[in-house]
Length: 266
Image (cartoon, rainbow, N blue to C red; front, side):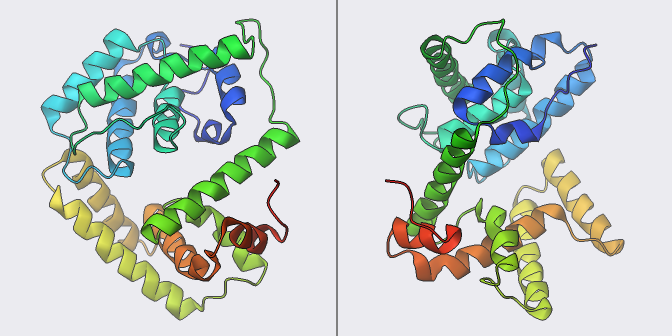
């Protein structure tokens, strides 16, 4: 088997053009010879993507099977990095009008989103003249700035619309280090416990789903070992940052200026 990584989460941070260039060097699903690895990666991707898409009920086993078969039949030339990136682009509205899932994460919905992604990827390759000979490229300072601006815009829009942003946790460390976000240890513990109870409650709704059972066991196991669960830590940070930034939503300029200590580019 190729020594390329099947899924590298850091690639989700690449700009659109850089990511499309990088796909030339990513391991395609068709190139993975270990069927167990394919099934494990697929199960994890389905579970995570459905959760982020706010699908309330667990994805039924027959729909998971349908999705896996459809991807292996129609989208096996994509990588697992692309499956994740495609739904990120869908969530950010980059692929055009959002496709409604009507609370059903099934093969039809997944296929429509991936069809849009494939068409978008083709357009980017033509526009940027990206060919198979293209070498891996690092993110330029301008691309990094564009990614940062798009990220802050999405967080701002989420906070304005919902009062909460799932991605706000990425701002936690910088705000804390700058002395802007100050939360005592006792309050951090309270928030963690609140988010843990909320998360467990969501998981227990779908307790018959094998993936959900595994997540519940993992949380309980971590707690018994005196360790904090990474997902709950992330949710706690998102909650804390979302609450803190409520006072800076008058405009994107105010929001951006407070976080970056400078005005956003025109």
